[in-house]
Every structure is written in structure tokens, then in C-alpha cells.
Amino acid sequence: MQESEIKWLKEAVHATTIIDGSISWQSPSNIALVKYWGKHGNQLPNNPSISFTLSESRTETSIHYSMRKKGEGLLSFKFDSRPNETFGRKIEQFLLKIKSFFPFLDQLHLKIESRNTFPHSSGIASSASAMSALVMGILDLEQKFSHQPIDLMKASWFSRLASGSASRSVFPYAALWGKTAVVKESNDHFAIPLQSHVHPVFAYYYDSILITDAAEKTVSSRAGHALMDQNPYARARYQTANNNTVELLTALQKGDLEQFIQITESEALQLHALMMSSKPAYLLMKPNSLNLINAIRNFRQITKIPICFTLDAGPNIHLLYPENEREKVLDYIQNELIHWCQNGKWIDDKVGEGPSPLQL
Image (cartoon, rainbow, N blue to C red; front, side, top):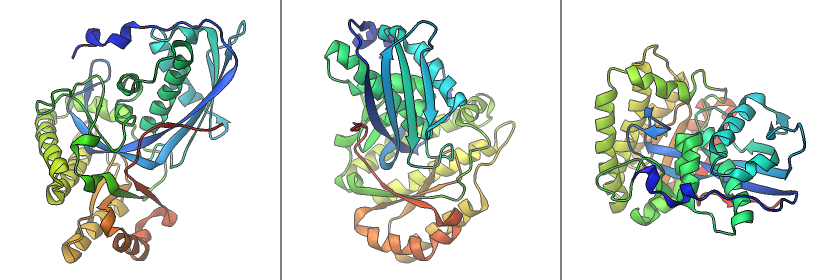
């Protein structure tokens, strides 16, 4: 699919009358199973990716809008009730980038406030939840002028421009972003939902996020993607990711937990191997990340309980398991794994339903 074929990219909505008001949305993070690492063009992926949409790890964003006064800027931004100039500039740059599609932004001043329910910039895809929540708010504002329902494909397209992984956060349960030959409607410009393509066991999957280090990452995901341009293993990686996408789609459809575990763990380790083989090389895993990985594998081997791990671009471990094993896994976390978590911190999360409006 070419961008010129997308109808809603040609339909700019102009405001007529603006009345002060507020909009508030929450959007979840997602955890990639097949990893997106490396991009080209205008935020387009070098390989397809598959993710689970989470439930508790989310960003809550409110937008107060009013007619812009003379000398007033486009926006002011607060994160956790405090000004955040760095992220505010990122949001403003994004809004300026897309304002030709939303001409009413030229008439508005936006007061945006945002908060996360999880540690910021620690490898839990905070940009995915933050930017998809922002886009849902902008589309909700557009809806006030167009009176058209929000199109999630459109939300995914604009979210991708802000943060690639954000394109997947707008859909419930699971999403695929990037062209693959085995899914006709797949493309690089926006993600598509996989809810109807997965076995029921995965609709009730849990993700216990074990926090080994809540500090901000030493290398951003944006910088990591750029380093893939010169990575000596990039070509082989993209081919492997394409193959793993096909195999994981089959495992998700069939409910094949053994294949799911093999691919998911392999993808996580490949992601961090790419970081270690970049120039300059860097390492985001911490000693307790490895302790947790070894403990999880040993527990699975001894008990035959189908738990597995993955990591995003950070040190924290996502422990994935089906609902019917929850009681045993929670006991294991509390009795064993919690000792390797920073200050005993972990997030009890699960596969979730995607963005939703919040009551102000």
C-alpha cells in the first residue's frame, strides 16, 4: 500500500467554531514479541514486528484546548505535573509535522499533561503509550469538527510517525506492523489488529514486568535504530525477523506455546545481541537481567510450566505466561524472582484492550 492510496490522508478538517474544552485518553504500552529494530524513510520499519498490547502499563494524557491568543505558542506540556521541556519539544515537533492534516491546530493553544503508570524510559516502550495516547486525543479533537468516528488505522498511521512502536498500541490484544507475505493486508505504514488471528489462550496472557533497573536508559531507542544502518549483522537479522514473523503468526493461531516460547526468547536475545554488536557497542541488560533469565529457564525446565521471557530495549524482564498458570507463577515471583527486582518492584500486567477515553 502506498501513502497516496490512503483516503484519510487527503481529508484535512478545518475548525469552524472553537469552544474551550478538554479531552483525556489513556493508551497502553505494548511488548514486542518479534522485535522492530532498524528503520528507513519516514519512520518505516526494516522488518515486520508482532506485539502484545498491555493493560496496566499505560500513559494517561489530557489535552485542554482553547483559541490561541496573540503571541501564544502551540502548546505547554507537563509530565507528572511538572514542565518537561525535552518531551514537550518532541511533542511540538510532531504536531508541527502533522498540522497540514489537522489545520485546526493552527488556531489552538494546547495544554497537555501526561503521566505514566510505569517507570519512564526504562525499556517498557513509554514512547509507544505516550504518543498513541496523544494521537487518540488529537483524533478525538478532530472528531468534534468532522463528526466522524475515530479510525484506528488512521490512529496507527499517525502514531507511527511519532514513534514506530506506537503504531501497535492502538489495537487490542495483539498487532502486526510491517509487510509480510503471509498477511495480505499488512503494510509498513500502519499496524493491523491480530485479535481475530490468535488462539484464545493468548487473549488471557499475563505479563509480569520484573524491574531490575528503573533508571532512564543510557542509549535511546532512536539512537539504537540508527546504529543498525552500520551493523554487520543487519541483513541477516531482517531475514530472521521475517521468518520469525511467519512462524510466530502460526504459533499464535494454533496456540502452540512451545513454538511461541522459542521464538519470543530468541527474538529478545537477538535484540540485545544487535546492541552489543553495534559500533559503538552498548549493553542495556544488567546482572540481574541475566539472573532472572536463568531462573525463568530453570523453573520452566523443572516444572514444565510454559513461562517465558522477553525484553524490550532495556534491562527489565517481561515474564509471559497463560492465565491457567497464574497462581503458581505468582508464588514463584514472590518467593524467588522478587529478590532480583530493584526494591522488590514489579508490575502485574496482562494483555489488554487498547486505548480508551478517560473521564475528566
